[in-house]
Structure formats: structure tokens, C-alpha cells
Length: 166
Image 1 (cartoon, one colour):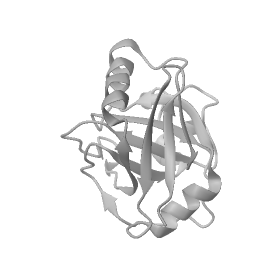
Image 2 (cartoon, rainbow, N blue to C red):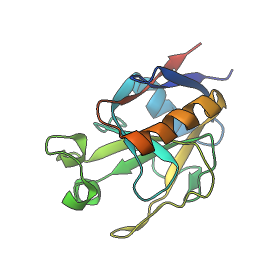
Image 3 (cartoon, helix red, strand yellow):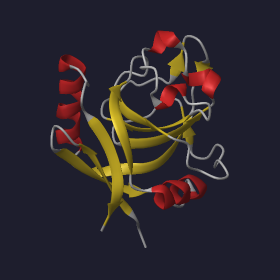
Image 4 (cartoon, rainbow, N blue to C red):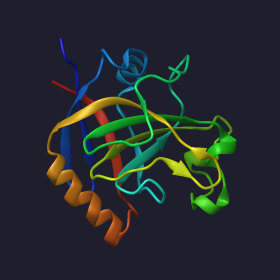
């Protein structure tokens, strides 16, 4: 039986529906499902291109490890990243002091990709593979328009949230 999540840009009032990819990423899907709801400050990717994400306190125990990984996500991919503190806390990345990026535990990054030609590479760290654990099946066009608005007008005050759906 398929499991679904709702992903929302809360301030903009836009949501989409995604199906978990339990067969391709069972450990990641289970870790995320158990930890829902999740969400925090929304960010638009500086490096990857067409990505909106949030950083939350690490919740997987144990971490799922790599499964269904990609460095070239496509529109509609929902991706999980686990970052150690040294990987995410660089002041050049622009995260405010006190944000999840500066946690001694590191951070979990939950991301959606809304357009083509994404490449997960970071000038400091190199390739940044993530686990594709869900696929957006409804509302991608609306999320893409809202994500483009984030890019053009800024993310301040916006939250990206993930929760279970029927």
C-alpha cells in the first residue's frame, strides 16, 4: 500500500502531494515517515539550481545510509540529505547563527526539486548525493511557481513543511 506526504510552503499557502518510494528507498522512507511532521525555515538552493529545502534536527536512528542516491535530481524528486556539522556550518553558506546548520549534531536536509538541470555539487565539498525517497505526483506546477517566487523575492519568513497525507 502506497504512503503519501504533503509538502507545503506555508506562508505562500501552496502544497503538493508526493508518494513515498518505499521499494527504492525503504530505510529513508521509514525514517522520514516516523519523524513526520517536519519543517522549518525554507531556503532556495544556492548551488543545486531548482531546489527548495529546509534544515531540521537529525531524526534518523540509525541514519539510512545511501539508497536510491542521485546527484542529478529531476523535477518532482523529494530528497533526503544527512549533513555532519563540518559539512553544513560554513559561514559562507549564509545560515544564521542558531539555525539547524550550526547544530553540533549536524542537520537533515529535506528538499524538493521543481525544475530541470540540477547538479548536486558544492565548491567546498564536491559531489553531494542525496536519497530520492519520494516523487511529487500532484501540485508540482504550483510548487514550482512558488519556488520561483522564493528565488525572486526571498525566503525570509517562509517555512517548508512535510507531513503525512491520506
